[in-house]
Amino acid sequence: MYERLKSFRESLGMTQAEFSKTLGLAKTTYNNYETGIREPKSDFWTAIAQTYDVTIDYLMGFSNNPYPSNKVVLSIPEETHIKKYRTLDGYGKDIVDTVLDKESARCTAQKARAARCQTEESAETGAESALYYFPIYESPMSAGTGQLAGQEYPQTTPLIKKPPHGASYIAPVSGDSMEPTYSDGDLLFIQATPEIEVGQVGVFLMDGQQWVKELGRGVLISHNKDYRPIPMTEDITCQGLVLGVCDESYFQ
Image (cartoon, rainbow, N blue to C red):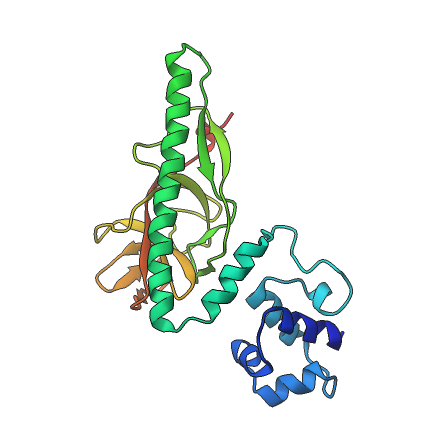
């Protein structure tokens, strides 16, 4: 079990000091866990699993598959990019994040335009049951306390009626902080855009987490009054504008 823990840490290219810091532990405490001097509690394994998206069964040696069933397995070039990213200082990470956000939005918009062209061509041929093939993400965006932003590629889903004008992709929302406007499990139409107006609801990336919130002046606002406004940090970026709900009427 402890050899597996050490092997996993080393696979991340991290020292004991670096790894323990990400878990909020003192290096000496972590060293005692990794060497078997002390028996870690269950919350230790949970913290690693949630931080690094790895299964507890793998960490404890009960499985040889480190990935949850819904995890996107990274290619070797992707893993290399991540390792390089971890070597950057704050300035370098800001530059990479800015380029990545803009290019991700551009490519998502291109895929959406291609999907619209495909459906328009089908309609022009006279097909009575033309479908609208549209990008959809499976991982939810948070309408609550924040959802860790992960790397995911959209799938394509057929819709039986035309999406709202300007929509770029569909993504699910989790949590109840945007009720009654949007509920847990709703599929949302998102327009990829780096800016929205105050008072509009958008998708935001902040502190490594994704949020679905109304844009306020210096804060992100929940529609559920049980949630307080969230102060915006300097690293916040807008990823899109929420156009509405993709309800059952869009599917066969």
